[in-house]
Length: 227
Image 1: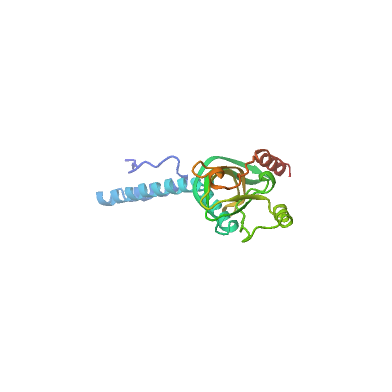
Image 2 (image 1 turned 60 degrees about the vertical axis):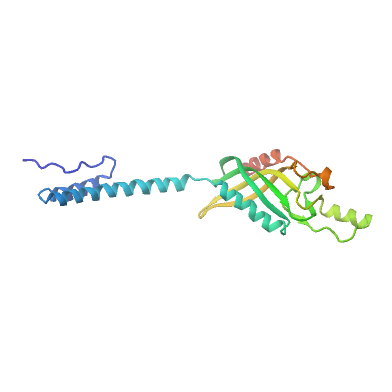
């Protein structure tokens, strides 16, 4: 009489794995029911581990930088540039795009965030917001003369902000894929708007410069793609 299989193998398993499992099960055909059940359970567990491992592997390969990664990148930049004068209040991802430039995977994550200035200072934004970021400078203890003020403004153009002033900003974080994962390649702010709770009009602060770097960002990606 032809021996039958105790548990039919899954067709998607490699042939050698199927053959090995069937051989073990056939040798246990005359064993006790308990042994046959145990062997069948072992086979089921192996299949489960294979499925879980495959899912984790493909999830790791296809994952992009998370909103948490982006928020931490902005926080790190604030810690580096603001000298303790800016506090990150809220952060939201608004969009994202995966691309490949010169065989390198890059991910552009667009975001909006609310920041608050913890002390009165100068927010260095450049001319018309051309250098908008998180850099700040301390205000002089005494008013500067006309010539000294002109020199200071020419070297570090920006806006005077009051303590507690809140601003909504938006921008793009560029990530680059490396062997150990995603790394931050740059952060660019393209818009800033004072929040209604604290405005320059009722607190004596200078208007916050707003600008758009959308075309600049697109040009960066195009030029990088062209090499």
